[in-house]
Image 1 (cartoon, rainbow, N blue to C red):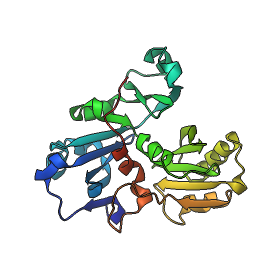
Image 2 (cartoon, rainbow, N blue to C red):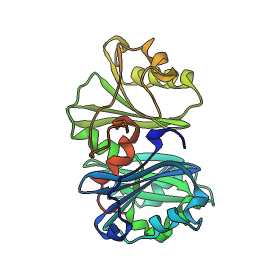
Image 3 (cartoon, rainbow, N blue to C red):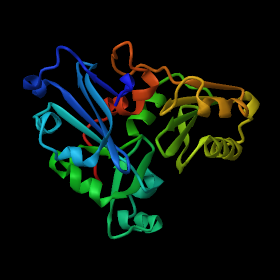
Image 4 (cartoon, rainbow, N blue to C red):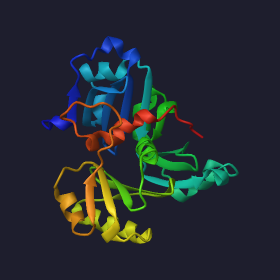
Length: 270
C-alpha cells in the first residue's frame, strides 16, 4: 500500500477511546476497506485489505475487535432487485429471492434502501460468515450511504452518477428528487465502462451531449476511465461532495462510498 490515498492514521487516534468512534467496514468480493470516524472526522482508514486480515493476529485484529460506539458494514451484492415498498409489504422475501437464482453458498438480505424502495440482494456466504461477529444487524447494502448522500445533494436531471470499483461500476440517476435508476455491472477495462455508460444513458433517454457523468471510487483525474468517457459525454467530473472531514491528501471521491456509510443507521433486516 504505497498509495497515500489508501491508508491514513490520525496522530490523535487512540484505540482506548474506541467507544467514542464509529467503525465503517465496506466489503467487495475478495477485499474489504475500513474507516474509523470521530465526530465526523476521519481518524483511520485502510483500503483493499484481504479477508484473512480479519482474523490475523496483530494491530489490525485489535483495531477491528475493539468496542465501538457504532458499527456500519456495507455488504456487496452478487445479484439484486429493487422492490417498491407498497409491493414488498404484501409478499414474502422468498418470492423476490427466486429471481436472484440463489446458490447454497449465498445468503439473501432484504433491507430498506430509501423512502420508496426495498433492496433484495444476495451476497457470498463466506463474507457473511466473516462479519457475523460484528452483528448482522449492523449490515446495510454497500451503496446505501452513497445513494443517500446523492439524494440529499443538489441534483440535476442531466447528471448521471457512477461509483467505480475494482471490477464493477454502479450507476445512479435521480429525477425530481426520486430515484429513477440504479444498477451495477461488472467491468474489466475502460471500454466496458464506456459501453455500459452509453447503455444506461440510452435506457434513460439522456442525450450524451447534454449529460454530465459524476465519478467516484477507483478513478483519478485524467486517467483511462475519464479519458475514455470524455470521448462520449459532454462533461466528465469527479464527485467532490465532502461527507466527513478528511486530511488534505485523501481525495473525497476516493473514499466517498465508504465515508457515506456514516449516513446509515442500524440495518432493518427484513
